[in-house]
Image (tube, rainbow, N blue to C red):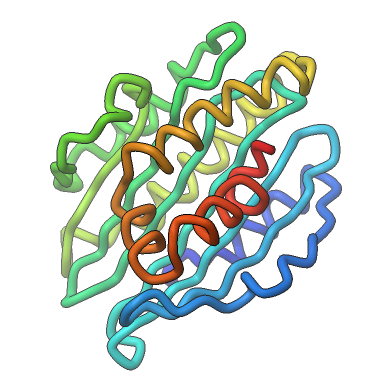
Length: 219
């Protein structure tokens, strides 16, 4: 199986939901240091905001895909996906953040995570948001033969997340958005790996606009 792309993930979304792209204006293409990002934003009808970033550096030798889903009409956690290919390493990071009104049962995601326990875990640096990161989150890094099942993990986990999203209870946007914004403001105040890069190269004001209006749409 070929490497899973963001385009395929978007297709899986589109099979289940009505998705409409939003014009992101000047944020369509951003350069932050050596990284060049192509950014897109989508409204998912009756769900919330979906944002995608495709990044590359070193003449394509490093590639990074990011997908963020903030559910406002369904009471599901913040969903974040990162896939990085660099120096022969294939790194996968699925992170779920507590933005619940009422918690969901994510046992099925934990089961998928367990099924792929043979893929080496990737130890992330300690960060302020660890206390709200849910245990069903996944971080893996491998190369060569050890990475051969990474795409299968991505697909199985993503499809199961979509199943959970389907069954998540509906909620009031006015109650949900502040919970997502709490995380967004936490990133802008306390930082994070991508947050710090954007603030350094495009400034705090533009980064705030990017995060609040496009990536998380929390304002």
